[in-house]
Length: 477
Ligand SMILES: Cc1ncc(COP(=O)(O)O)c(C=O)c1O
Image (cartoon, rainbow, N blue to C red; front, side, top):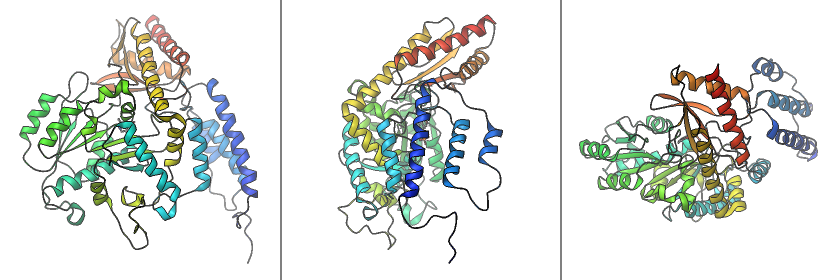
């Protein structure tokens, strides 16, 4: 048999020993440069295509050459989104211990689907379930599924919701599908994140009624009561949010759940970043009634600052989650019910061991550390809002109770949408800090999310100064 020049065989540590130190050097060089790196979105597409593309080579390349190309591609095309002055979208950084643990997870290359594929993952998932349920003060038996992102967590939770509300009306959706099923009504906030309606679409739940919100963006309870009175008796799901993506506002959770439960409904909460506020005593009051919901979705890659990707789906009644998603082909051994088998709780078979960096961060920070990080980000967001609001013609639109700051820029001689977009573009190009634009109540805004472990007061001052310079400069021009 001829031996290939390109496909390595025979496990020996030589190739790892040649490659991994190069990656360590490249990663350290990247991370060392990050504090001084302009915080901009690079625009090097032709060069990126040139360095990384071309036809797929027939003979392959040496792995060292592959890594060199990749490092070059990284220089050209990565956004410095783990910079302490990156406030775009709702991204979060990666704590050093999380990054290191993630590397180990990749070296171990475990599949977390079944206990006998990885006792470590199975047991870590169970341990983190307990830690997180305590941290968020959720019902003790709450089950968890680790997912690629909050979108999948919403989908996972809503699969359980669909199962439960139809079962309450005598319909087994897993065996019978939706044809001929009692119609499920879904009520959701008009400001809910787009991943919730998308999950509903995937699940075939089309009878969705949108609830209007008050000036702050919270579900208007009296309108909600009216809508509930109009809904025919039948399966009901209500979707609320813990942290709206632009403003961080939280729906009135206690009333939301109480009224839905009176109607036999299921309450699902999207808390992609906001659920982490439940970890801190100072913010728990904002989330009054959180524990009354039936399911909650969040991301660890946002406020826990683990690397991408890691979402989490929590369902209060673990049996319902299992009934909705269980799967039992003969080759997947789940006979021992004392052991955790993630394949029967989430939507995936194979999965990356996302729990490893989650466990590492929780183990390092402890509950006090998580609280401190969340509280610090909320305080920095308030500081940022205060610095901006002092300036004439700058309007902070939201109550900054969490980590999001929604800001709009005015000027006497031009419409505010245009000015806000021009200030935002100038700020993004200046490279001191970066934030993304959005719309709130139809108006253009710049939205800053303080969510990186590394961010300091100095970073906030620099970001505010750069932003206000752009605003003043445009007004003067
Ligand atoms: C409030 C909210 N819900 C859901 C999501 C979707 O999360 P993911 O991007 O992890 O799927 C986001 C993302 O920013 C979000 O902010």
